[in-house]
Amino acid sequence: MINLEWSNTCDLGGMLYQNNFMQKIYIDSEIANPDYDIREEGISDGEKNFRPTFSYFGKIYKFEFVATEFVSDAMTQIPLHSYVRITEDDSYAIAKDVIIEVEWYDYFNKITVSFIADRWIDVIR
Image (tube, rainbow, N blue to C red; front, side):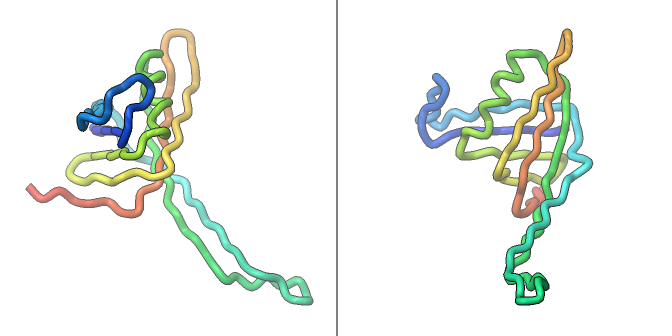
């Protein structure tokens, strides 16, 4: 079970966020099948040999679920928000670079949520 919460520092999309309002949705899904973002920057020498000066490795987490159109409408606005928290089981992450993809079918939509998180924090109970 995933708990997805999002909010903004100022009003957005007709929603009053200035009073600490927080959107929240519970999704019956699991974070699975991550993608990996590996990038290198550097220079090439005279023999066209690449010498990396900076390397980046990022893990892009994903989860998918099926929803109706009005849930899809709300989900597509999430990347515009300044605070997105994703909780799964006993750990959570503050998401960065959230990407929402919607595939339309006849009676439902498949929504894929992708995000980058610096670290997962375990909740101690």
